Image (cartoon, rainbow, N blue to C red; front, top):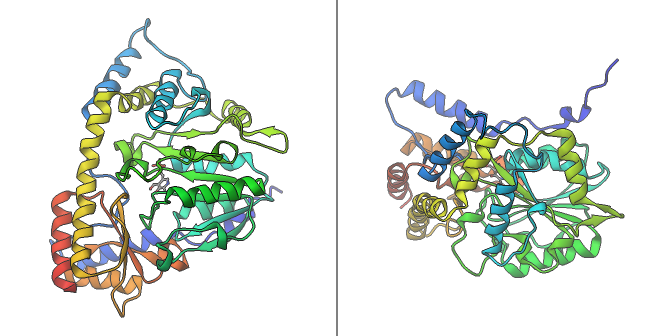
Length: 394
Ligand code: PLP
């Protein structure tokens, strides 16, 4: 008889967003017509920019004509997009070969698939609070997890000095949910730590575009030594509004080898076996993001979210509430006022001011006592939510 993957039984219930939705629904049933201000969502509220929409339309037309029709594309990504992404890194002083860039259908998919490269006997170090997919994907692969709690005293930044032994390390910067951004020196310490141990860092840069401070690294490959210990996973979801369109990319340097095996070459083999690539139409749309026109338009949209983050940060500053994020990240991670736990604070905000956020406890035990607000909402709702918060907590 077939044996299913027993590790599914070890997953914790994915109750966070389901429980939030349940509570919202119950409130709306009891209070029909009352508008809830949703500051908990990680999804974007603004549409794709005009340059991307035009490229998508043109690509559809290409597929309608024999002379411009595309069938299968190279599994690892269309050369035009791999080149555009490599050039984007080049603008920041990071030299990549297009062969080191792999086009994906999004960071979530890739965070799961990439584990194929590693033996399930490897231990995975996960700084927490964390994006829930890191823990769940590792559990499904039967991998031992080393939890690394972070705290307010250290700005929710993980430090290798306190880390247990591990082979695979998840780093996310700017971080979801804490909005904390790894400064250059700390990222260098992680790179050194990984190189010394022969470990590999999975660097999730899904929110790199929110960094405004020129001193902060967008990519782990801005750090010397990262080419021998890191894989970077990126997404156009939050940068360019591709949450529903689905496109991302992964960088694996050609020098990354362990036990005589080259991880980039292994990933080529993986993709050519397990994928037939991402659609031509989407890759054309994605390439438009990296044109000068696309970059200008994407920055305009990012400005809306950055303004939302500023509205939230200014409100918490005025209230004297401790938080991380908001300055180089689309998330604000605030300390819940006494005496509330994170779920109690959720209920309090819903009941008193109809504002929805995300309880920190849902991102791991070390998130208890904290609360996440997202900057991806509608600007008018964000202002209204913060005005209500200010009245409630003053
Ligand atoms: N990584 C982090 C840290 C995220 O917060 C998210 C989405 O919220 C993702 C990856 C997934 O991105 P994608 O939409 O490309 O799958």
